[in-house]
Image (cartoon, rainbow, N blue to C red; front, side, top):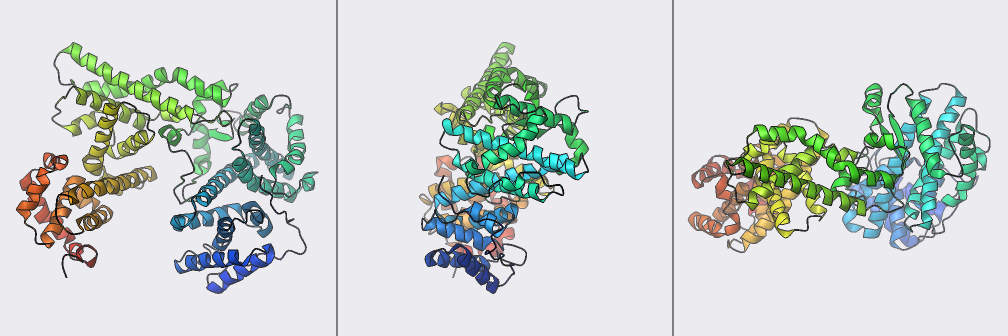
Length: 629
């Protein structure tokens, strides 16, 4: 690891960190204090001060909010000038006695708001630190509180803390053992330290202090505390009969079973399972304990987390409860087991979907029963082919030292399965050029949400596992069709509810709509001769998506809005409407706009709804500066 300074937390020469207010003088005080304590160079302080002033100007530093942004700015400045040997986040947290959660909240705000001006390397390292620390901190607090809730005496509190610390120690040992197999372990060790420091402080502050706790050194080097922490915690676990020095894998499994027995001894099936550092809870335990078991990490880490995996399976791998009966297996063997059993497992989950599919009497363009059966079988085979490709792609991304593959939630996700089956059916329909009178009827036969389908299709396409060009092109065509037309029909019901998952799907739809609209306008601008039509049309479309998604998008679709936006700007520029529509219809790629709405209905929509709704905006300076003076 990179050499780091070591400053004891009880250093008598160290002054207390300043109280943070909401005025610029407090920012000055904080920066001056940081310079005095850490003796960094003037250029580092100047850069940190400029970041802090800008954050204050934007309103990110207020009373009770953003007070730790100057600390984040200092770390960025040190990283920017390459002075890595002087100060790191762990040293800063130790010496300044900052709460990890508070620091991570402000760091996430800092990298979100100034991300475009920061180096890629700093963004990756900062996001990894924030995500790793918050996840470990939340799980540790949840883990410890569940033990403490079982006991009341101070000695039992010590035991509870020790078990929570034992879990963290297992993570630490696993990371250190991985040094033999992979060089990518410093990140795990680095963020583990921030949580382990809090654990050590907790051990020392208990009403009945644990002997030897004060002997654990305060250092930025995980290796430096491992031996002391091992002697402190493992001996207690050995006394309990749940840790065996000669078999770390079995010890981890035994620790998980022991914890499971303590937390919910009455459950017939394991309800809390320790597997490679993740704790999973049964539905029964969640029902008994309420939502306290479900930490919401997203509000804390506001910025998009690019450092984490975003493949379809990674986004949906959340639970290992259905694999708990195979507790003697390692993560790698569990993942391989998934490959062996997932076809039959998935097929049982698809029975109700297939039954609904049959009840709709979808005939694949034929009345011959043998042809219907054959084409239906092709859809199912294509479904399993795509599923197999996704699974194997996901497993190929997992390293030998990081066996955290878990496919259970994904295999049990109705949304993912039905979307994939629907796409498989549509690809077969396209291959045989089958005419379908109503796409909405086919979508409803699968009982899928078009809005959720956009998220699923986007993830599948992003994984790049579909190698066949024709299948991929058809899949991408479906993705565009949902963005342009079908997904917007779900928006009215979405905006009337409060489901966070559905709103996340809507955010995916908005980003996809912006991208698709821009590509369309770039193509159109080469055929429709109107000055700055691309940028000004895009501003109209963004305004509609943000302010009027229900009245203007839910029943006509994105392609109609693009056409109307181009038409409106052409009218402002005194272009002939006949010429414009004629040009637009000549663009083969965009003739589909007239498949969902006739020319007369398009004109009626434009005159009666589009223009009255957007008239103030169309004549605003933002959209018509170049056309209307």
